[in-house]
Image (cartoon, rainbow, N blue to C red; front, side):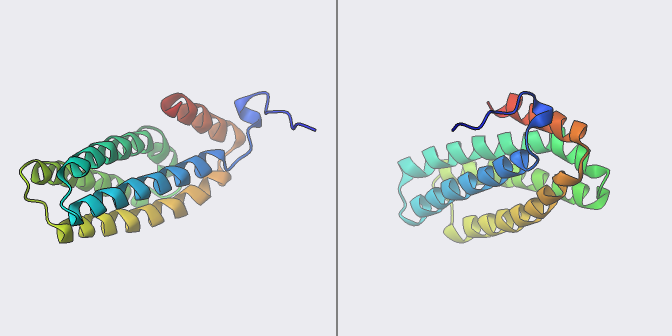
Length: 153
């Protein structure tokens, strides 16, 4: 017997957006491991391609969070929302420097590993924030669901 899909976004189960965002983190981690591996192996072609893929995925993820999630979350914890925005700005700048270092063949594995560690700590803080999404009203949650679906699919 098949389970009927929710008829409207408002009927979508809470946790859907959180699950997608956590899945996005896992995808970013996998791509990041590929970049780190190509840096260690000095595989210039893979390093560049993986870095371009990672940058696109990370920036898309960050952009959605800043446009939709952080304004919603700001009402719950404005300090953390601002800290996450600051992290995002730092990550954008670091990504630019890493891209240049890859292009000029000057990237160091240690520098990239520090960046990856910072991203991991940031992701853990975000995932704790994601858990609070279930506290949103049904209407607010449905709006986030719509925005996430429209932005990513």
